[in-house]
Image (cartoon, rainbow, N blue to C red; front, side, top):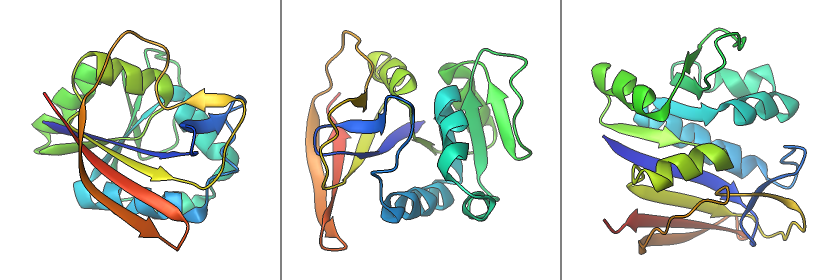
Amino acid sequence: MKVILYMVISVNGIISKKDGIEDFISLRGWEEAVKLAKKYGNLIWGRRTYENAFKVLRQSDLDQIKAVDKIVISENKNLKLIPGFHRIESPEKAIDYLEKKGFKTSLLDGGATLNSFFAKSKMIDEIIFLVEPVVVGDGIPVFASEDFEIKLELLQSEKLDGRILKLQYSVIK
């Protein structure tokens, strides 16, 4: 299965502030996530990303991805999820679940720990970054500190709304 990592980042690679708040991210970041989730029919989040999403997203935002198969990866069997989200205990099981449902591509949308697991396991095939024109001094990076390296080839770059840079990379395997 092809795995696409999609993240909205600051110019210096931060995905959220230390408290999980993403108030520096524009509405365009969510709109692009919705577009991709609808295109691929699925969305994978880590537990902290799921919990932090509800600090900023409204029900109307979530309604935009109602038809999308939404996965939260967490080993916590007691994790309470709102209807429409499925808890799966590992990245490998999430990919198996999606493959069994007939998906050919999965959309991974963080956070840092989950991104690093996928990266270290060489499970990422493409990366799409939406770069917001802001520098965040202290926050959570795209990847948690792990020992891995990913070589990339730029597939496309595009300027959105005159201020946001969309970068799409292929992972060189």
